[in-house]
Image 1 (tube, rainbow, N blue to C red):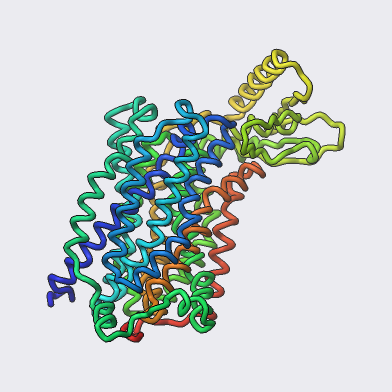
Image 2 (image 1 turned 120 degrees about the horizontal axis):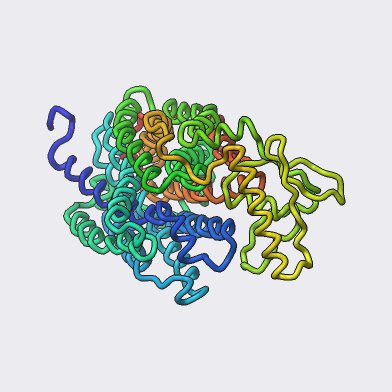
Length: 546
C-alpha cells in the first residue's frame, strides 16, 4: 500500500468509478446549464415567465423519477451486483442525452418537442436513480476501515466535476460559435455524450465486482427480496425515513442552491451575461472542489454527522446575506436602485394573479397583472401594497409613479398601443431611477463575487463530501444499494431537484428576488435538527455485516 493509504487496485477503482460517474453527471446537468436556451427552443408557445418555469419543470422531471430509478436499479444492484447495474444506467443516460441534441424544436414539430424532451429527462432521471447508489456502494466496499470518507469523497466530487465539465464545454462552444450557439450550437454539448458514453462503458467494463458483494454472494447471504427487507420492515424503514429528513433533504437543497440556484440567480435575476456567469460559477467550482476530499478525510477523524449538520446550519443562517451581497457586487446598479428607489405595485390584491400559464392561452389583463408582468420580464424586484377596490393600479419607483391600465375588453390594436405607451413610461421611470437592463460587466466585482460563490460551494462540500460514507455505513450490505438509494434520490430528486422551480415560482409570485431562499433555508434547518438528534455517528462501523 502506498504512503497515501491506497494501493494500485484501489486507485484504479476510484478513478474508473469516478470518471464514469463524472460523465453521467455531465449528461444530466447539461440541461440545467442550458435551461434558458431550452425554454426558448422547446417552450416558446407560452409567455416568457411560464416558459422559464416550464423549462425548470422539465429540468425537475428528471429528478421526480429518480426515486423510482433508485428502487428499480437498487434492487438489481443487491440481486445481481454493483458493477453490471451501473453499466446499464450509464447506457440509458448517454443515449438519452445524445437524442436531446438531435431533437427538433417547438417551432419545427410543435407540442411533440417538449413532450419528447420531458420523456428523455424522465429516462435520464431513472438512470441517475440507479447510478449514485451503485458508485458510492462500490467504492466504499473497496475502502479499508478508517478510509471510507476519503475514498468516497472522490465519488462525491463527481457531481460538481460533471457540472464543471458541462459549463466548460458550453463556454468553449459559445466562444467559438457566438450567436450561432443559441440557434443550433447548443446541440453540440449534448451530442458529445456519444463519445463520453463509449469511454465510460470501456472504463467500467475493466472493473471487477465489489469484494463485499462477491463474498456475500459466494456465501449465499445476498438478499432475495431487497425491497421487502429494505422498506417493509420497520427497523430499516425507520432509518430510511430519518436519513431522508435528517440527511439527504438538507444536503440536497444546499447542493442545488450552491450550484444551480446561484447560476440561475446570476443569469435571470441579476442579468449577468452568460459567459461571465458561467466563468464565475466554474471558477468557484475549481476552487471549492478539493474541499470534498478535505471534508471526506476530516469525517474519517471526527465523524460524518457533525460536518454535515454544520454545513446545513451555516447555509441556513447565511444564505440571505450571501445572496444580497451577490446582488450588491455582481450588479451594483440594481442594488443601489433598490435601496434608493424601491419599486412598489399599489393595487387591489384581488386583481393580482399568480401568472403561471401552463397552456399558453391565458391572458393577464388586469392593471395589477400588467404591471407585474412588465416588472417580471425586466427582473426588477418589487413589493405589492394593497389599494382599495376600484383604485387603479399604480407602480411607484421611489417617489415617482406610473399608472397601469386595465386591458380587459380593450380591442387588440388599442391594447398594443396601451402596452407600448406603458412600456415607454415604465422604461423611462426605471432608467431614471438607475435600474439597469443588464449588469454592467465593468461594475462586476469579480474577486468578491467569486469568493461568495466559492463559499456556497464550500457549504456544498461540507454536506456532500462525507454523506456517501455515512449512507453506506447506515445500512447492512445485503440491502445497502436499495436502502441508501431511495432516501438519497428522494432528498436530491425531490427536495433538491425541484428547488429552482419552486424558488423561482416563489419569486415570481411575490416580486421579492430573495423570497425563494426560504425554501432551502427551511429544509436545511429541519435536516440540522432531525440529523443532530435522531441519527447516529457511523465512522467506526463494520460495513461487512449482512
